[in-house]
Amino acid sequence: MKLSLVVPCYNEAENVAAFQAAVIDAFQDCGYDYEIVFVNDGSKDATLHNLKKLHKEQKCPVKVVSFSRNFGKESGIYAGMEHAGGDYISLIDADLQQRPEIVRDMVKILDEKPQIDVVAAYQDRRGEGKVLSFFKKRFYNIINRLSDVNLHSDASDFRTFRRSVRDSLLELAEYHRFSKGLFAWVGYDTEFIPYTACERNAGTTKWSFKKLMNYAIEGIIGFSTKPLRYSIYLGSFTAISAVLYLLWVVLEKLIWGIDIPGFATIIVLILLLGSIQLFCIGIIGEYVGRTFEQSKDRPVYIAKEVLDYEN
Ligand code: UDP
Ligand code: MG
Image 1: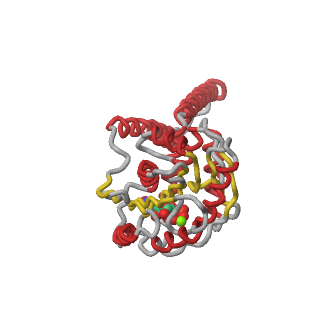
Image 2: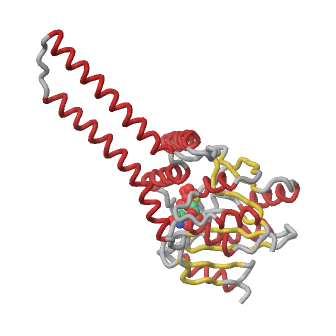
């Protein structure tokens, strides 16, 4: 098997058949073998039913891994890579926003350039709103400054890579997964190619602003411990400010004999310091929580059903 397309699906009932058709269309005269590894990420609609139909028909080699509940796209990618048998593995969405034709170009690049291990697509024109775009840019600025890994600001999970890269990624069995960071962390030589995301074939996006926010925090906490360092700086700064203010108050009293009317300042200081403390405890908590999650050593996903085509 030359190529495995790994497709995480969450409530994509209307899309999976169209996706397979588009793949067959794009790869009909490619001259190599390929398979589609669908991962049903605990969908609540007819996705699994439709996937089973595709598996039964086997118009092209189809594997289906079905989760016991919704574990998230990152877990879907992990499971799909585990079950992928190809020399090349491609991560692609089920909603046809990322065209299978581009995967063919990616494969061509890997074939022609043995020194390249990963071909990653980045969005040259973003179809999303200005506000979201602004926040995404800020996020990549922050994470690149905070962490050791360097992320391409428009890169997506839409990638094709060699099996050796897949093996390295699977070795990172961390519970909180952030693929873009993991790709940057394992290294290898990456070529970036531009692509334009199409409209969704059917259904709606699974990302809300809140989910994206959590995803961003995931990325920062998962790849950097610098927030902890910064909370030390912040603490030092407020401590120094407090001492200076104390000196000022004493001088005011001794030199000019001014009485300090206290309660307003005290309330403000209590609120300020209290919130800084809570903020820093929150940061520490994030790391402790992650250590806790990881120490439980739970699997990244649980598969309820695996439909392989060999049996
Ligand atoms: N997805 C998933 N599990 C989730 C959320 C999303 O497997 O919990 C899949 C989804 O079915 C799709 C891909 O991840 O194939 C990308 O999701 P979506 O299209 O909603 O994201 P967007 O393209 O809007 O960034
Ligand atoms: Mg999409």
